[in-house]
Image (cartoon, rainbow, N blue to C red):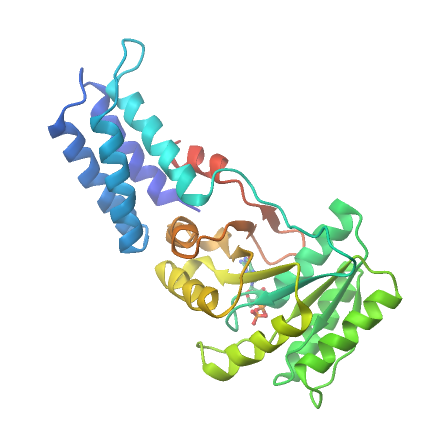
Length: 296
Ligand code: GDP
């Protein structure tokens, strides 16, 4: 992720290296390039505007000491602001509730919800020693139920059986009771996705949220959809009390617009990145490390 942005920022900031001072003119030129680079990375326009404005204000007020060149000063400001944009440090899952802690997975069809449910189950089981159960409430697509069963088998966690003639909330409530009985620490609830946001889909997931009171409600989104990802995130955020975001397919996304837009648009942290199709391809998201990587 961020390959092209890294390249562009490298060029932009290189231009400042030879300058002795930060002037209004060279700040202006640099910020024009920064703005272009962010737009090319498919960052949402209001996010670009806010970002450039914050960098401008700080750069104009910057005290350039003898030990730092103007380029270094601006790089530091851009680095700080990129980190702040994505939420400073990693935020983990807050699962410290009466078990089973429920994780509700929300998102559009094809975003990677089911794959990510498996990855997360594996992560919690292997990295945190949790006893995990998963369940599918996608009663519209029997294939989705089969897919989750196969994913669960693959990562070695129990899958609560569901059939397409049941109500999603009834399935989820049955799964909670079973998870409790079997002393599971975590229950991950995979939900139905649609190709676009619609009222029926939102009403259904709102009903699930209300009946489950999840410890985490995670929005799963394909990072390759760029600023559309931020728009979809906003729609889900308006309908549901999201607690975090998982950005999938980061391995195929060279631009990074979604990663840079989502936090600002929803106020919710990106907690994980999906970095491939395999069940191990899930990484905690660290905004500070990502910002440093963008700046090379
Ligand atoms: P769902 O409809 O939201 O449940 O989506 P799926 O879990 O079925 O995933 C849709 C497709 O995206 C599948 O082919 C997955 O293998 C693929 N996928 C999911 N996450 C990732 C990821 O992080 N990287 C890559 N390259 N592919 C992914």
